[in-house]
Amino acid sequence: MKVEKANFNLQQIPMNQSPVQFAKPGAQAASFTGHYNSTDIYKELMHYMPRSVKLMMKAKEWTGEVQNIVINSVGTGLIAPIFIKYNPLSKTDEDTRTYSAWRQPVSALLAILTQVGATIPFNQKVSSMAHQGKLGQDYNMTPFMDEKYLKKLVKRQHPDFTPAQIAERAEQMKNAQFEEVIKDLKTKNTVMFIEDGKPNKVEMNPKRYKETLIKTITNLIKEETAEKKKSDETKRQFRIRRSEYYRTHADKANAHLDSLLEIFASGDIEKVKKSLASKIGKMKSNKEDKELILFTQEIFKLGNKSNDNKTINSMRDKVNRAKSYVHDYSAMTSREQVIERVNRSIDGRVTEIDKELKFFEKVKQAILEDKTVHEIEDMFTAEHLKNKRLQEKPVKFAEQVAMQLKKQTKSCINGYKQVGGIFVSLATLFISCPLLNWVYPKFMAAVFPNLSNGKHQKDTTNLILQANNPAEFQKKAEVKS
Image 1 (tube, rainbow, N blue to C red):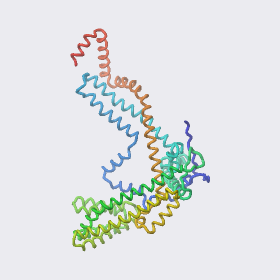
Image 2 (spheres, rainbow, N blue to C red):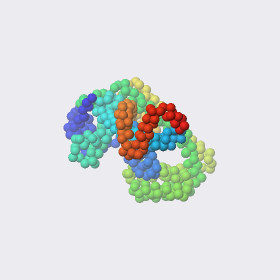
Image 3 (cartoon, rainbow, N blue to C red):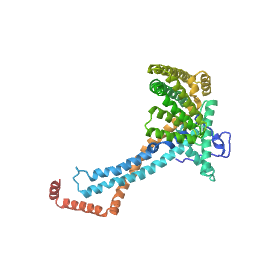
Image 4 (tube, rainbow, N blue to C red):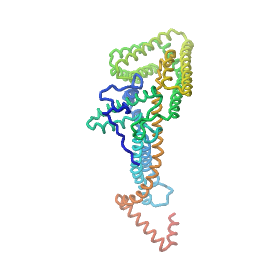
């Protein structure tokens, strides 16, 4: 099947084209992840992570069908020969076992070359077709083209661009297309797709669209239900422990909090983060109180949310709130008083979450009654004025829907690649097996001529003996066994 390349003109601005195509270099990229960009937070956190954690995260990223093929093949090529060569149950001679053992690494190498050589182009083709809308709506990535694909488009249209310019334009295009999805959700109550490279977009399947809306609100309900359980169990015990520490170690806690405020005095977020990292290391070395170390780590994580010096204000506010808690709890005379106040506070939080969950159930019912995204966002706006929990944790429903759809689509594509990859790998067996039988004898003859010739001569001698004197051959075989 011939798949034509998508032709995206980044200079023209047809009325039926996406704003993805006319984002200008240098324009301010839109942000849809709240006040701080989660990607920046992740990168900043990883900068301060231990080497072991970084290696684990890299290993997690390096997963997929191609990687599995490589790992399995390498494992087979390295481990299987050991058991073949040193198998105590084998009745064959050492040369024969060695000759057989070398077959495994050669087979593994051919498996990598053939299977990976076929799987990578297959995955690339699937990704390309998904980004052109050629696989159906369940696999249609045209509203959410990833940065890698967008860079290819920019490079094709602007071969004169530097890598930095390509990356900047791709980022702007990605933000613009997300903005268009949000706009369509609010104004058209649907998501528009490009299908098979056609110029006119089509609406999302109504059934799938409604399922996506329901899935979005269901996930919000699950998240808040988990938060309620966490507050009612984990946070309650955590708050009691820390508050009791404040009650019994008020002087030490105040001195530590004052030292944190001194660190903030520089006003430079980078200096603050480095000072906090150093302080945490020294506190651990000196085996200082666990609660003070944990609190300092919380402040450090808060600082990693942004490189903006204004972040220091949030860090300072958290420390000042802690000082007020120390003041309040240090005035108490018993642990029972601490527990009573913490329970009152947690119970209030649980009540607020219950209110939010009840509102989410109303939203779910509204979706079932075919309310539009615009109407649902109006519900959120009205509820925000009276719901303390929503004020603390604002929800932009249209953005949640867009992110849910993107997640679903990527999941479908990954499933497509996995299933297709199985058939591709099976198909390569018809190539790799005959290739192995042809390559292996030649490889052994070239690399281990003595071993290869010895085995060949021994096999020839055995065949002649068996043909000329079957009885004597059988007798020798029995004595050998």
